[in-house]
Structure formats: C-alpha cells, structure tokens
Amino acid sequence: MLFKDCLFCKIIKGQIPCCKVFENEKILAFKDINPVAKVHVLIIPKIHIENTGQRKHIDILGELLISAEDIAHKLNIFESGYRIIINRGKDAGQIIDHIHLHLIGGEPLNPIN
Image (cartoon, rainbow, N blue to C red; front, side, top):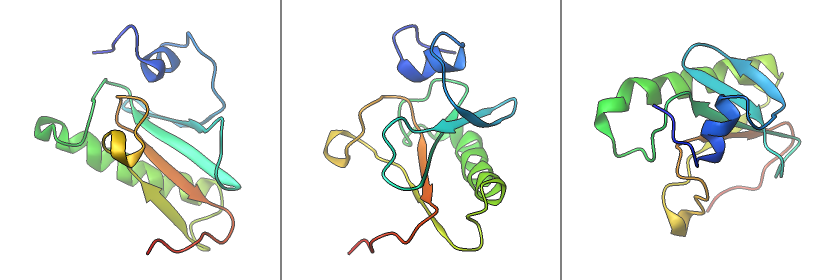
C-alpha cells in the first residue's frame, strides 16, 4: 500500500525522479539529494511503513538491512566500512514518515559518542 502524499511513495511510483542504485521487488535504494558523506544512499521499502514499531513488517526490516550490505558491496564501501542509520521520530530528525535507512560511507566518518 502506498500513500498519495508521501514523497517516497511518489518516488516508488515514478512520479518523482531519483538516482537509483538498487531495486528489487521489495526495496528501492537511491542517492540522497543532500548527502552528508561521499556515499549517502536512502533504502526504502516499496510499501508504506511509517516507523519501526510495526512488528507485522519485521520481515521487510530484515530485507532493508540485507539490502544495505548488498549495496555497500556494490558501491565498494563494504571493506572500508559504512554506517546504517534509522531516524525514528521528530527528535531523531525523521522528516519523511516512510521508514528508510541511511547508508553512509565512502570516507572516514566521525564517531558517534
């Protein structure tokens, strides 16, 4: 199920263009338009899930993580290292209410303390 007013759902439907780096039947990954590192990819499910608290979608959360590793290999950052981030809620910086992973790497990243 996709939501008509969701930015990521519009990208999935092809209504908004993206720079795609990976796609399968469940997942779409594309370059972030405001990257914070040399490699910054957003990995989204092709169904609208607002947050990580929806246990009925636990399988797709696993798919997102496995896809992140596949994409890290594809973009040649697997060996050097990368970071996977999920922002959950306003205080964490979640802007779009469609769950997504940030895959960040390609350069040394500052530690999170």
